[in-house]
Image (tube, rainbow, N blue to C red; front, side, top):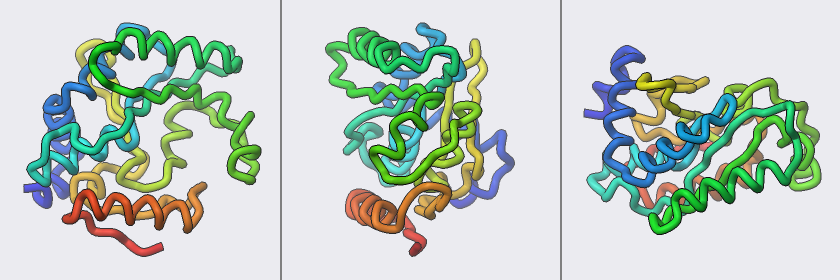
Length: 198
């Protein structure tokens, strides 16, 4: 099933992704809250998207083993950490009682702390999509959102690796050590995952 979808046209892959995410109540809650907040250039993405797909393809509960959900937005007009923290607190408050942990990041301010945390200089991102294109693997470099009732997908490397359950390094930023630790963890949880060596 996943192989046929992985080679299908992008609009069919997108429809499959939307339907799969509907099976995860946590993902739907995050999408709903983000849409209500109407953050600038926002996406729900990364592990919460990829791992939902892999859970469903493995026959697991859609939310199994997902520690947190990533919500990103892009607001170059307000780079204050206080604003980012306030938005994260608002999201947490709206999801209180659902047991959902959400990590909220303004991708416009990542360059302000990236070098201090990871030891590498980072040029400022130009958009949320620009940031998504640097996430650690091709399968997890995916963001989704709703624009009205329209399901919007940002997938700089396409959706084939995600739907085929292929873990492949996106070497734009990730280091070999971080990639190998991440995919080892993933392979233990999702044994049908094909890991492409660094």
